[in-house]
Image 1 (cartoon, rainbow, N blue to C red):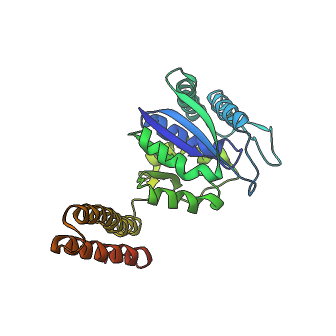
Image 2: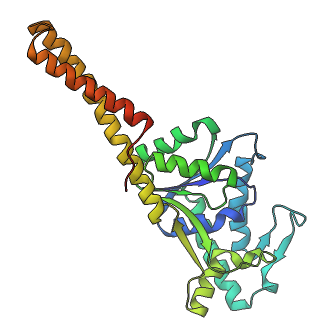
Length: 272
């Protein structure tokens, strides 16, 4: 079961359409629209967004594009004026298929509001409860992107994706930057028009993740070792006496480990 967790920070449905369709084509059957509840940015009406995504798919399947935000809000564009009959028929066929798939019982689409303070815990729970998942930050606000990246780094999450255009998009005709048109242009121009990129597959991110693991592992081991040696020292002192050679050796080792633990807290080991 493949799940896609899409962070939303805008109420414009076509911002999410490309990612959703791409993931559906890749076999995803669970879609979660996640909003971080915070007073820093205007909140999205999640139920309305879910409805508008479905409505936009339905409109496109009928050969129309609807504006949901901005000065052109509620304007309906007849795509028969933008495409020839063959291309329009192909467009309607594709969106009929995707719309049917999106509203089918097989696809689960849920809205998930989470508190900002629970962001790290929520991302951690995703990894613990899912073996096959994607976190999508295509349309997330810059306010949250650093937080999400930091949480993924700490939680060792390595599948953080964004839908990326490989050309300069023309936003005056938004239907031309939806996935049906991108696929068509790929066939015509024989080169990729978009890619679904993993943001944490870069060399620097991987090195940073290894550096954190390298720092935290020795610290954890030294703390556990110190606790074990303290327990052993108390046991040795109880059975052999405080002045015995064995008790003194164990106590000395425990003291050294304690000093190392203290050192690692303030001067963590860094990878080369």
